[in-house]
Length: 258
Image 1: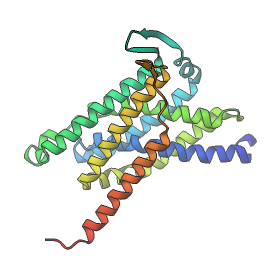
Image 2: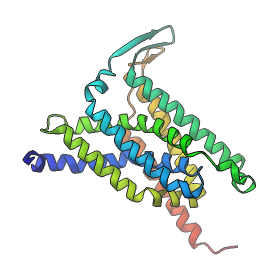
Image 3: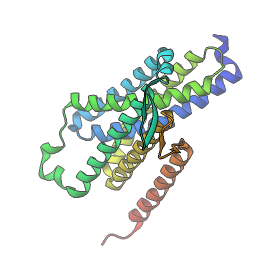
Image 4: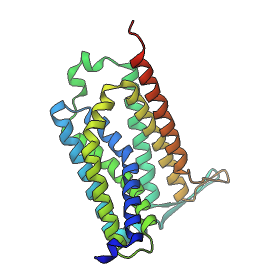
């Protein structure tokens, strides 16, 4: 137990908890969008269940870390004149998750832009069953959990009691996200421009997952290797876009109404 309170372990725990929260923001965003399709009395329940499932999935992956690492091994190879790749379990999961995110985001953006008044004209159009919402949340939680666990393993590599440090960090981060998830969801729901911006982020994340899957599969297209997309670029783009949007919101709020 004393190994948990060494300066190295505490630093790793605090850093990892912060990173888990940062990595969980896109998870909260997706859960909020899906929960927004539910009747209001079920939205909070769906959000809490979604985050609880995220925590359980991450812990199960941590406990089965040997199985997770084994998913990096090549299942089969794809070689032709256009593409060469060594397909692994991880690359399949990330590729499927990226496609799902891009499909879901594009579909939601289309509905909001082409049918902006559909919720008022057809009140039942936005109603989604709780079971379907939980299924969608669970599927995307699986994808986001991989990114979270890869970060956790890299951060705690070589530390004593690394597994339990990772578990504690995951639990703390999810509890913090649960406290603020409903507030984030309500705020996003009240601002349509933020909804479009959030969906655009998910579209970008979906593309990044496709690139990450290709990188893990050591894919080459026409002889050109697919490199890894540094996540710092993604976080900078998201942060800058949010800053610009909050400035616009401030300007719209202070401008005289016509």
